[in-house]
Length: 327
Ligand code: RIB
Ligand code: CA
Image 1: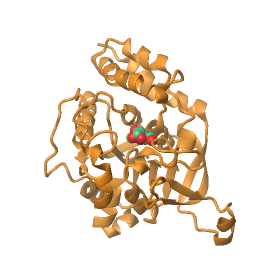
Image 2 (image 1 turned 45 degrees about the horizontal axis):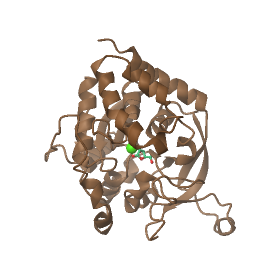
Image 3 (image 1 turned 90 degrees about the vertical axis):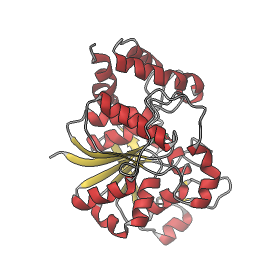
Image 4 (image 1 turned 90 degrees about the horizontal axis):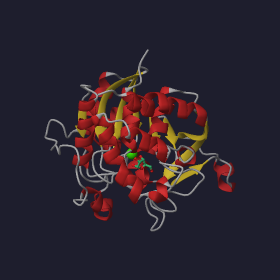
């Protein structure tokens, strides 16, 4: 039985200099017969929301897949937070490689699409979120009964026992919209959190990225054109070992259930800290107060990874697939 999913993403492959990683995760999903992708919703994060929507549309066109695509709004869940994160919706300096599309009233309703799809298939649709959680938080706010229709959310989000990546305290997807993340963690929906703790053990080598670019197929040339600037401008992330595959790991954990091992925790998102907003505070009931309060867990946190198994799946469904493309 195929697993029904909706992918919520901030895809930047197609916007020069944007993090290409979501699109590798989406490619993995598109190449996975275990999944039935009911829709893709785009969210502001790596790039402004209309860029992400355009990049996702281009990818679906390249894969010749007619999957419903909806855009979220160009702002954070919390209006006040939006004042500090407004730059996420601008970024006019980024060159757009894919045709820039403008979502209209029929396609900019990500939260409604998520609700209607999950309600229609109540209890059967898993959300896989690989960007900020804005769309999910809006859906929770607009449709209070949505929680009972969603059996699980698997999210690339947060950092449990290691520092953040966008700040010492916070991982980008949570930092970009902390209030949204906390709304999801307190929604009561079963959550699987795939944090930096395991994502940082994944790497797509520079050589692998370069070898994809050696395939003259137009789509491989597009990937090379999209990824090259990221390699150059983010050498701190890429270094010589390569690009972290955050979103692909979260997606792979949905495809192959024994890829990761988990520990239960009670997770809340810091939304008041001047220096720590976006921190995912994970209580494993091992702290002094945790032992006393014995908090009921609200998430399964991935802390162990079978890296060989992940690399094999990624090679099979993404890098190997790209290299196999023939003109
Ligand atoms: O912190 C990693 C996350 O931020 C990934 O989802 C990546 O795509 C970026 O959005
Ligand atoms: Ca992402």
